[in-house]
Image 1 (tube, rainbow, N blue to C red):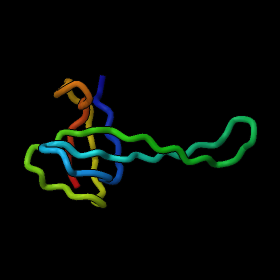
Image 2 (spheres, helix red, strand yellow; image 1 turned 90 degrees about the vertical axis):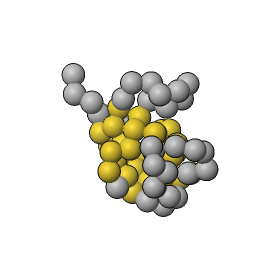
Image 3 (cartoon, rainbow, N blue to C red; image 1 turned 45 degrees about the vertical axis):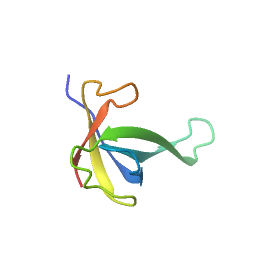
Length: 76
């Protein structure tokens, strides 16, 4: 099964080798037929600490790196 790739914005880079990425998705509500925006935060592995708050990055699923990290940053 292919690994999922998501695009989002870095919201925090305070931890060592970790960034918090906010990913927004848009969908049409099934009853109201209105476009809804939902966001979710993912913690991703950043090996070289090169990404800063506000950067737009792509993250990819990976094997668990820690208790909360299951994603890694692919590119900016």
